Amino acid sequence: MARFAARNDIRNIAIIAHVDHGKTTLVDAMLKQSGTFRDNERIVERVMDSLDLERERGITIMAKNTAIRYGEVKINIVDTPGHSDFGGEVERVLKMVDGVMLLVDASEGPLPQTRFVLRKALEEKLPAIVVVNKIDRSDARPQEVVNEIYDLFIDLDATEEQIGFPILYSVSRDGVAKRHLDDDSKDLRPLFEQILETIPAPQPKIENSLQILVTNLAYSDYVGRIAIGRIFSGKVAVGDTISVCKLSGSVEKTKITQLYSFEGLKQVPVQQAEAGDIIALAGIEGISIGETVADAENPVPLPAIHVDEPTISMIFQVNTSPFAGREGRYVTSRHLRGRLEKEVLGNVAIRVEETEVTDSFKVSGRGELQLAILIEMMRREGYETQVSKPEVITRNIDGQKLEPIEQVVIDCPDTFIGVVTEALGRRKGKMTKMVNHGAGRVRLEFEVPSRGLIGFRSEFLTDTKGTGILNTLFLRWGEWQGEIANRLTGALAADRSGVATSYALYNLQERGELFIRPGTAVYEGMVVGENAREADLDVNVVKEKKLTNMRASTSDEAIRLVPFRELSLEQALEFINDDELVEITPSAVRMRKRVLVANQRKRKSS
Image (cartoon, rainbow, N blue to C red; front, side):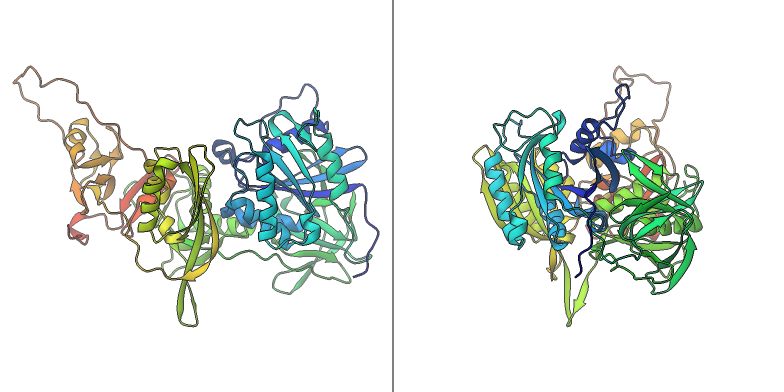
């Protein structure tokens, strides 16, 4: 392939890591030390986590761009999610960069998501800088972790050039990076120097012909849809006529009305940009992720973005409960369809299909977490919906039924090895590795069908008394593992509408665990608790104490209720059975039976 002149005044890099290894904190420090903020500017921690959900959960959900200046060089940085459920974000942004910075915790070492994001980077033939972060931890073991990283690169079939990666050590929170553990560095200068040294300057793919791959979409009330991407070849200016090479193979001509470049956290209007720049374009109607903006007269499309197939699906329906329409602004199938179509535009890993029922849609994604985040975002936007139990997507190849198998890595105190192994054994899990570092904690690795992990997280936290850490990663498609026992308990379902009373709940406590508090509005068929037995039980939670004019010394003592268990959205999705749904509104998450009327439901044999 012919080589054209590189642009030495620019570098494009993605930061990749496992969840909570310090990516976003490191970007904060890089922004501060590059002079992006004014001296008197109030700075929010984890400034790149701009979504409320990202701040609350402490994870990156959406890939985001920023740019800093180091001397005469502009460094475009892409902060990527560290969770494989959001792998679609990682796959598309890696198309925009010329190298990656792999961040690994100095104590935890490489974890499943580290493997996932690194594999994607190596497939793109990108050079890597390895940063061992959090070296100030009391349990840090940087030298062992470096050896584990080398093992991981070799395991992923990295080339000799890729294995010759430079290693730096850092404390993101303090904004310090060093080439050797005993260096006396006070800032991130060694890291900036390493980026300029290791990450190649961008080179045009073809000469004098425009090529921009669209890898992200944004929306503005003023200019409409904004396409974000990297210029691989050529130049573009405001007012230029360009061609859009659609995914369908057709070509459409249009004009550039606005052009933006990234400076710090802002999009800055510019008149023109050239190969190597990461830019945002306005004025292109109907453009999608993966399409190419090309030369008007000689359009040459770039290869489309390939994304791993979804493994989990759920049915999203219009809310049909007796409380429908009370709490949300968007409640019709038209609203639901429009919102899901909008999500597909900006999220390449989500699939939406019509079903035989007009007000139901099959939504497929990478995992429970990705779909739960989508539901939570819709809930906060004012949508009402009800969703079914997550189901795995299967494949039929040569008459053999295949299902997704996941790698599960568990860190827990060694006293819980037995209970964790037994729990995953019931879910068709096979242990593949066990490592005891000798510090009282053990690392267990299993291969488990994705089906077996639905509902496992909350059980795992209970079994390990909140001390265990669970990480999962899609491994391969494997043969069907047979039936897996689902929830072994039944549900307590309200048998009439009304408001739950303390008196009724007090008398139901011995039947099982309650999910509601006194004063909660209920309707017939709403799941209000978990039965201690296998069969479902219809209960009266609105019953009031009969009042008489008789008095007894103990009759007016305060009723003492056992604390109820308030389920989060993810816990509710894990809890429900096939005959149940989760109802989601802006102000509540409720569980209900598919068939609300008790005498119309099929009875389970107890």
